[in-house]
Length: 50
Image 1 (cartoon, helix red, strand yellow):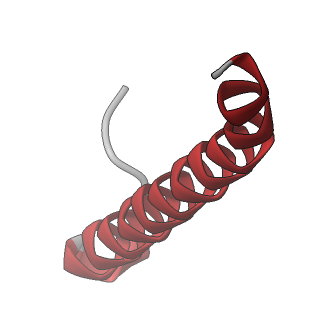
Image 2 (cartoon, rainbow, N blue to C red; image 1 turned 180 degrees about the vertical axis):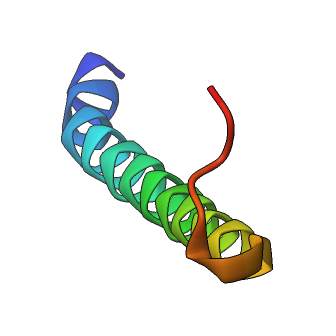
């Protein structure tokens, strides 16, 4: 039974890493699009007030 468990651990770790990477990439892309959209909404290309 230990052999089965130890054989499944590396694929589970690799699968978890790829899912995490995909989620991180998607969220990053969404933030970039939101920032671009916010820049376009500003009149005259002015910076937002700080």
